[in-house]
Length: 139
Image 1 (cartoon, rainbow, N blue to C red):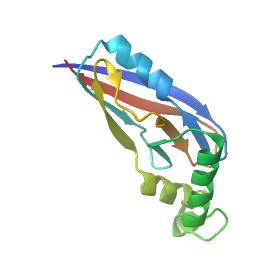
Image 2: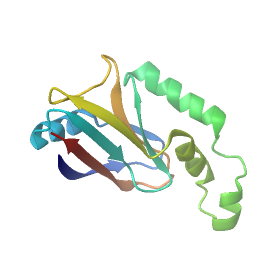
Image 3: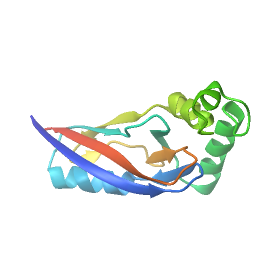
């Protein structure tokens, strides 16, 4: 078995950003030359997530609106009372979606549905250079 680690970085804004990273991850799978295995995609930190969605305007908007209903901006969060960062909502949203996904690799390609894309979701209220950790393993 071979293991490859690829760091990637994406700039984000001070709002909830949803960034399609599918093409970059697929490119790294090709570079690794893994035919059968898996790709682990993870974002370090507690205010961002990795997930999948059909990355089209309506689906992205639906996700943003659902997250706003679940963990709205502008209400009191105990995290904000303690630390004063105003990003309590970002921590809750990230916890709901989680920091990583693992996608199978078969025939040298990511195994994704026709309309399924990998996305980085950054919830924080400050612009960042988000680091993504991609680990590809297999044969």
